[in-house]
Length: 190
Image 1: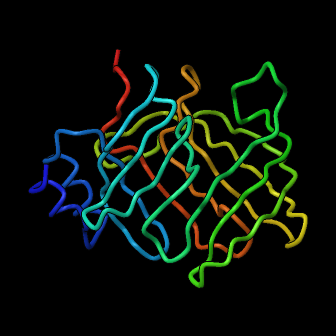
Image 2: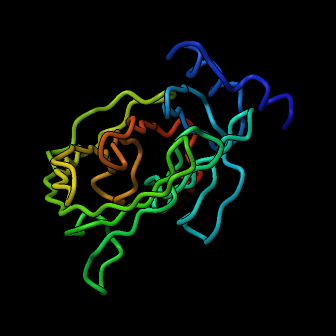
């Protein structure tokens, strides 16, 4: 595993695909806080992989919940947590009408903000991922922040299973974007 982690920082998209082919572990191509990396899954909780931890060579870590960033560690600016407001009977963040996010800036100051969410999804279309092309719905979220204007997120999900294969989000107002694509999935393939 140490040898695998030593090669995970890449210089280009082509490097990411090459590394992903070589790594037999679940992996993501990740762009976050000015860094691009192929990260491997370090931990999974629950049979469906509802909570996963992804780690790079320098031990920077991203936590996904249901395929979406929830927290991070080892970056200049860290995502502390995102809570989606949705009906109690729902476990699908695409029905969320609001969220609250907490983050810590490079100076160690903790911040909180909330946003109203409007989501619409397009029909499925092919999306090129590091190791394959998959037909996915692009779901666009418009976030209206309580204290800081608007931002837009996009999540690409499988129209049948609802699994999220890729995303490009701004986790809090004025944050650098987090973009990820599943290179090697961690769930069973049919």
